[in-house]
Length: 329
Ligand code: NDP
Picture (cartoon, rainbow, N blue to C red):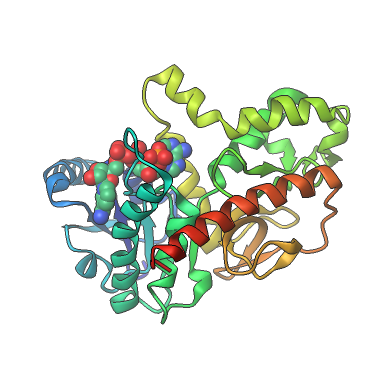
């Protein structure tokens, strides 16, 4: 058995943390041969709840779970970390403006970026789940100047998985019949699920839905984009298990690779591909191999798709400019 991988989970006592930790410890994220040390980071008021979760993790007797530590200090938690799942974030409160939200999250993600810079392992990989995820990732990245920029990513895999599930339902296919799905842009209702390059049983997905642009525009995109709100409405609580599952998928594929001929969606620092403003953390179709990802190049982007991508990218540029104005990046 190899040396355990140090995995930090922030917001570990929250809903997503509760759904995430057990799957990491079971081997779902890094595979059946990789033991893990779990490091649970929480704010002081939530440390006791994290201790309860740790007790339950112990009670599962997971063979791959080498150790659990609980922290309320980011510098200690990230010392020697190989993987960081940044889940804890400040939700938007009543009457809170966007600038207040960004500022409150800056107070969380700036010190976490500094802690990663100070002590994380050379191979650190970071996934930000806490919203606004793309911009929180940008804040952490900007405050970790010694860490390669590409190690900071944000989660659009839940949008990706939702886009696959909705397309399967529409076409009567199974989710495993669907390949080459891509989400572009921000993890927000403006994200764009790309049916022009996705495939259903090898057939172009847009053609598989009868080239129905009205359905694409009026039903499909809003259903995927507003799925989180629909779940809150039905369940009376926000999605947690599906978000945790998507986080597992994101890290799994980044570390262990994407299947031949397929790709996944990750929000990553833009290199300017497809005209996406360089430097923002935007979702692209990527392939992963050997622990690194690369943007899929040469895809056809029809006019409708380009307009949608431009709009979601503009939203991200607006968020970037706002956090720049606050001195956070
Ligand atoms: P959750 O575990 O439900 O959510 C955590 C974050 O994930 C939120 O920012 C949430 O965004 C985001 N998120 C991203 N995608 C999704 C999705 N599809 N569905 C739902 N959420 C999504 O929140 P809890 O309130 O249960 O727990 C948060 C925990 O974080 C608390 O225990 C708190 O103490 C902790 N915390 C820890 C910090 C730290 O470690 N330094 C800092 C701040 C908080 P959205 O709000 O938009 O739903």
